[in-house]
Structure formats: C-alpha cells, structure tokens
Length: 247
Length: 333
Image (tube, rainbow over all chains, first blue to last red; front, top):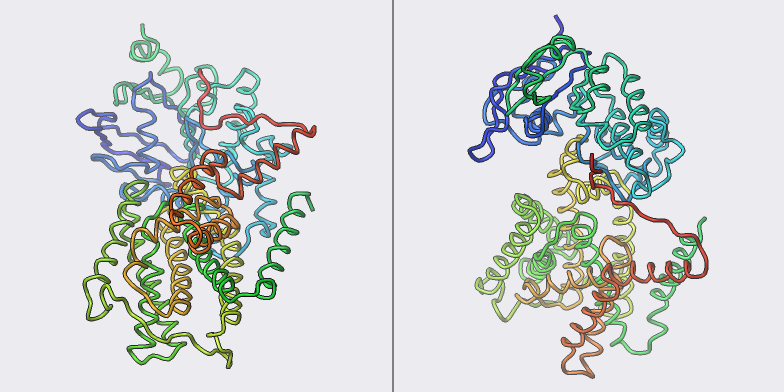
C-alpha cells in the first residue's frame, strides 16, 4: 500500500499561550487535490508553515510519504519532494525571472555549494529554467527584472519556482489572491495542468475556483478541523456555513 | 558586449595598467609603500565585503583574522623556528580554523546579534594579545625579520614587495569575483535577500553562510600574512575594534556588494590616514566629514553611486526610463 503524501497526527502549535493549531490530524493520499478552507485566523497558514518546517509543532507528528519529518528542517523536507508558495509573494526582486527559477533549480543540486563554478555557464540549468517559465507562460519575460513585472506575473513566477523543483507534494498558499479575473483563469488553467502524480494542498478563498479544483475539502476554524469531506458534503454541512460563510 | 560592460573592461584595464606601472610613476619609496598598504587593506576589505556586501552579515570582528594571521606569522617564523613557507601556511591554516570556530559561534545569531558576537570575539582576542605578554609581547607587540626571499627575490625592496602583494590582490580579486558568480556565491546572495524562501527552496542557509564566513576568514588571513611581512611587527592594535571598524568603513564607503568598492574604499582610508594626516592634524575629522558626505550623496557607496550618477546623466540625455514596482507587498484583496 502506498504511503499517504501527507499524514498529520495530533498537531498542536502554541504562540505564547495562544493555540494557533489545535490537535489537527489529517491524511492526504498521493495525487489528491486538497483544499484548506476557513476564515481569517483559522490557522491555515500556520498549518502550512508547520508542514513546510518553518517552525516546529508544540506537539504532534508530521509524515511525508511515510517518513517522519517532524524534526526535519524546511530544506530537508524540500529535498524529500515538497515545495511551496507563499501568501505574501517572496521573490528575488533585483534578479530576472529566469534567474529566480535558476535559484530554485539550484536548491536541489550540489552546485549550490560550489565556490568556483560560474552558474552563468551552466547552460542546461538556464535552459531548464526557461522551459519552466514557458510552462507558466512567462518565457517572453524571462530576462525582465521581477521588480518590473505585474502582480499576476509574480504569482505565476512563484508557481514556476515551485514546480521547477518537480515536487511530489505542493503546498499553494492562496495562489489566486489579488489577481484579476483574467489572471485567475490563467493561474487556474496552470494549476489544472499540473500532473496528477503531484499531490496539491491549497489554501484559497475564491470558492468557485477552489471547489472546482478540490477532491477533498478541509474546513478549519480556530485552529481545529471542523469539517472534512468531498465538495457536496462540505457545502451541505451546516458547520461550514456557520464558520466559513458566517450564517 | 554592452556599453556598461565595455566601460567596465576599459576601466579595469586602466586600473591594472596604473597599478602595474605605479612604481615607475612615483619616484619615492614612500608612495610605493602607501600603495602596498592600500593593496593589503583592499584584500582585507574585499574579504569583509564577502560577508557584508554579498552575505548581509555585518561583522565588527574582521580584524581578528588580520591580527591572528599576523601574530602567528611573526611568532612562527621569528620565534618558533618555522621556515617562511611553513610559517605562512601554518598561520593561514590556523587562522582559517579560527574563522571556522568564530563562524560557528557568530552564526548562532543574525543581524545585530551577529554583529555583537563578532565584536565580542574580536575583543576577546584583543584582550588575549594585550594581556598574554609572555607570548604576544603585550602592549609592546611582537617583531621580527619575517619577509621571505621567494626564488631569490629580495622582498625588502619596496617595489618588489609591492608586486608581491599585487599578486595576492589579483588572486583575491579573481577568486572572489569567481565566488560571487558561483553556485555558493549566488546562494549566499539569496540567503541575504530571502533566507526563509531559500530554506523552502532546499538551501541550508546556515551552512552556506558558514562556508562563506570561512572563505572571508581565509582572505582576512592572507591580508594578515602580508600585513606581517609589510610591518614586520604586530601589536594588539591590529586586533582592536578600530581596525575592524576601519575595514567596515572601507567597504561601506566604496560600496558594499561590489567588487571594486572595497578597493576604492581602502584607497580612500589609507590615503587619508597616511598622506593627508601628514598635512592635517585632524585627519580623522576629515575622514568623518568625507564619510558623512558619501552617505548623504551616495548612500550606496562611491562605486555604485558613481554608476548611478552616470545612469542619471545618461537618462537625462533622452534614454527611456522604467518604473520599478514593489515586490513583497500584497495587493489588497
């Protein structure tokens, strides 16, 4: 039997005395599209940060593809096949789009420790980066500085940097936030084109896009999971209306 | 080739030609010695720039490597019976090991914490040099005839010694410029700009910073070796906070994160310290005024500041402009 892409057991995180995530347990099978829903302050991004290894849980256990990663660092988890995007865009503003993707690709290669090898001469690395930009429709902007691009282009670059690493588990934190209708449609197509062997967990507030995307939905409220199931079950559940829709 | 890179190449060739021809251009050994001091200071500043400019790690303890390498070179060759080559290699190796230890300790913190730890470590070494008089000579310092005679060349000759140091400057410049464009150098610059993002991309931020710290310490040790050869004397002042601050001043004045900036900064500080001080008693005040002026009009330093001014002048002649957008701001939803 294949191990789940992500398995969380009794995860708890306190900030001072305040619990941000409370006894969360969930299992995401490989290849699933999972949506995390919940109002602001529900603990969704904190849960993402715990899964990504930005900070340790106060208690509980996280397993990625069967391997216990609770005590592993963020970079060690990335080397196990996990990638993520951020709610607040985090890019290298002074560099070109192409260079940003190159930095992403280097993260999994020993080249990152080489003090002498000029990365400008790593032809295959740059070609691979250009091909990744083509996937997200940004090839024509490859040599433009990030600082000179639009918000929507930066969102797509975030996704390009994540998929460049060919992850097995992809965490997307509000990838559609702040985008126009056209930009949303573009990113939506982009996400739908990601192969099914990549497990995706996404936080998103755009209900239409999110519900169309997800196989399973997890609704969080005040750090806890309150509803979990398929689209129809979650939408029909009165708790969803209570905590997420507010009535 | 772009106009900028062509201009940089021309500038580099002029600078190299001027440096090589320098002993013929000046008539006095005094000025050759000043140029030698600039070269040694430039190597120290370039090594500190690896941390400050490319790594975003502001250190106030970089004189440690200059001082320890200088003390070891003089002690080993003049007091412990080592030959010139063995003494030099042992001094550089031991100082690099010290950088490994200091890096391990200092990188337990970042930002102000990092700065304070480097300052504290530097001051501990200064205290040891000052108080352990039986080994270091205490306040009197440690002296000895340490300049070697490689391949029969008499390095007591100022011109020969200037060229000797110039070889090290060229090696430092080449290897540091290689480092900046290398995988490790690019990783270091990434950790400077977005450490959290770099971790998420699979980079071990601590290890990258530590390796770079050791690399910087190595070049600090080379500067210390040359310092010992040049002065044939070392005192606790070499390890003092003011020496570290002076190196930091060179980097900031010339331009952090640039290859030429620390060299220009080193030239500025050494010339003010040695030449101007002969005419003006309060040269430190003049140095302060110059530094404040640079910070006011070119806060990024002389080299990038000059580049920016040239860019503004070019744009005012009719070139199109581009508007930079903020990148880490979140669009309101």
